Length: 171
Figure 1 (tube, one colour):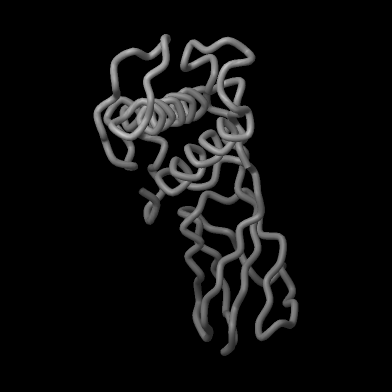
Figure 2 (cartoon, rainbow, N blue to C red; figure 1 turned 180 degrees about the vertical axis):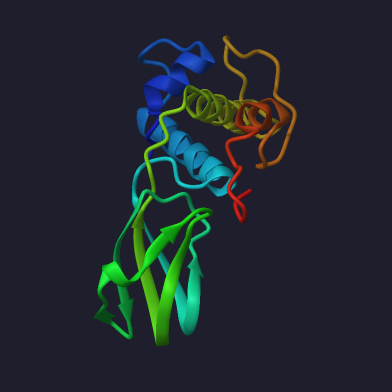
């Protein structure tokens, strides 16, 4: 899952030629960057999210931006979606009976150019750190080693994401 970026995007960010860098490995860094950003701002790729809870309750917090709820089950049995409402803040409201609740919902596609830029930058920073840091070999293009910076979100990427994690419970 590398959307919204792929190996070619990471190459552009690094200033690499089309044949430079292993495509599969660059795709892995791209996917990792998107996953890390999703932990910060919520799902960005339009995929289905599954949330588990326990009833009885009158609400289930999804902790994700969602565009629609597609299915709700209680102890494995589907319930009528018309009895439930998707409220602001990613909360499904209604009277949930006792039992194991599972809510399936669709996270909306986030095509913000800031998400794309942040993912490209994060993947490229991780690539440089891994390949050129104390344990890697610098190539002609990146002669200076990149200092070890951990796997968090660097400030430059964080600045791109500011304001995109405005849903309570995310970030």
